[in-house]
Image (tube, rainbow, N blue to C red):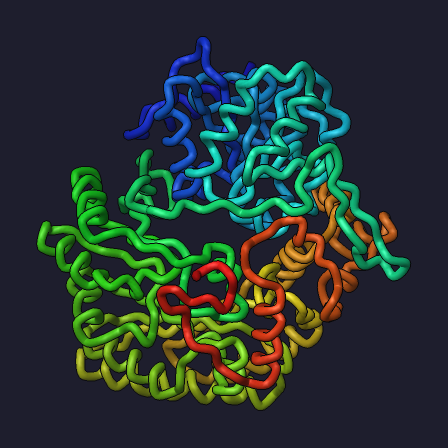
Length: 574
């Protein structure tokens, strides 16, 4: 036993307010695991919503597990004390179901650590009848489940609200054994049981087919919550020990109608859905009882027709507002003033690319004039600091595109400095550069990721240009982390074998070499038009021919209008 670990868990639990776990006894016990630290997990609305949904039922209980902090991990290993739940201190093998919430591919590297600390066999085939079933949910589960297909017993394909009731009913059924239970679960809409599917491959290593057996559907169709007003998603548990500890988070919308061709969230969460103003006002009024700052969450918060009215309501109640996403072309003087009134000292916008050619390629729908106008509005509103998000390594990117990016940054900086001089204080400009990672179910899923050497050259060129600009800094996502993200986002079942080696400290190339895999096969290889993708065991609802046409439009620099109500182009929104 480790008293230090148990005392820390007790202090964390005592510092929380909000939803509590149901007591043990006569209930289906679910261990909800976030494969990163407590600080990361407790700002994740999906994780908190599932916790609330399960503990709102009388027939289930849910307790939380996390990746231990670095010092706690050393204590676990030094004492041999297993991973335990925050609420009751029970171990993972005491639960009926272990449910992982997967939002980011790079968190996969933490999974072998958690399985080891929990003393659970890594591969699903090695687990016996007495072991709990292991499920993965979250966005990664319906983006591409295949890299974890030999680890997880089942996946929840889609959003929790419509899936959980049917899943729980099936788990409470009277299947005679583990295999029979999995076969019955495979009949639940939105549940993927990978052991019932056998992938085959062409001689060149590309997937040939995924053949379902024993009644499993050919594809598992994603499920989504049609009416967001019917189920809230907010900060059900509050703690200061998290990135957004001073905020109450409230989900405004899901999905996005913009059709940016690189954005997985824009296609995975179709059709776009919004909460009503009445529903949102009720959520933020509850939040203002606990925190004076409200964080509005969604892929396209500024696209909500009542976004400005909602912000005005929060400010009128004496609260402040933080917005997770700010659309450049949805920004007017009124919206900029509302951000300033709400106390924003820093705002982020996403031009995505410096050249018009690349903005058209990704279907951003922005001109340079749009970008500069938004910058001017924010500067005039008195917001001192600005963050700019750019992608690097987009298909066909060249040195001229990089020069255009630097020229655009220079023009933005000129506007920003002029406004700062009028205020009597210069603000700060930050460039956030992120390598483009081709994601499943997007039009750019056929495109390769740029090679690391080319990305390094681009970064070097931009860094040299930014170094000459005062009050301007550049930050960049790790190229190693981006490559690992691409490897698993685009991977098949074979890639999951690499995870224990990566968790043990090997780099990706060394781990792949040990397993006779080629990382470039998954990361930097263009995909053929008719190639079968491993993630197509999932039916996301978006037509493949629509995505291919959008890819061709991208390569030819043609823009596509955003979705309108009843749009039938993609196969979902209509």
